[in-house]
Amino acid sequence: MMVLRSIITLALAAGALAAQTTVDLKNPAFIQRGADLFARNCATGYCHGSEGRAARGPDLRNRDWDPRALYKSIHGGMPGTTMPPWNNILPDEDIWAAMAYIISLGPGNLTSSMITIGGSSARREALTGKAKHGRDLFFDLNNQKRCAVCHRLGGQGTAVGPDLSVTASSKSADELMHDILNPSVLIAQGFGHVVVTTASGETIAGVKKAETGERIQVYDAEAIPPPLRTFYKDQIYKVENRLASSMPARYDSVYSKTDLEAIVAYLKSGNF
Image (tube, rainbow, N blue to C red):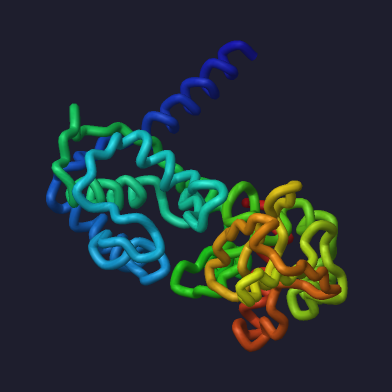
């Protein structure tokens, strides 16, 4: 038994070592790979703009980056902002490639450009068929109305709407499909639709995140992705709560029936 345990331990260790690789953040080919990834995923108008020249997201150029800190922000996202976690969207090496490109936009003063990283694609590859397609749709950065713009799943996504990790395990596939197509029939507690009218006449409709004696914070559902807006009580004319969901109806016009079934299959897989 002890011999068998030793063999298993060595095999697991060998697998872990095999999953590691060393990348050079100053390698031109690696930087170009990151540039291509950045152009496809990050250069949109509601993110960081062409070549990192600031859109809704911050300007990424001409800055000295700490590679590990930058990796943490990209890999895990930035809670409370529209910056999503990428660790369930791109393989780890692609995240580092995008980082290499971002670092190249500045002075690039690195203590060392050689980074040893661990592979993180095992969980991604565990999904097959319909559920894998559903995961790709859930986090599809080319679709502004993707599920992850408003929902978290397995620690990924944005907490505008309910976290679907628990919901997915407690409901049947038919119930999940009904919730997607008819979001206002059963509204999760704490995620009702609120309409704020400011003293200046502006109207903001969305999901209330928090309220104190002096201010209210609302995810503005009129914009995609929904920004978190803060209003102080002396700026507000009135606040109305409505028996409706901030989630748009008619998602069957955004996705085909096959795509919706794939998303539900991913939710029911439990493999997040």
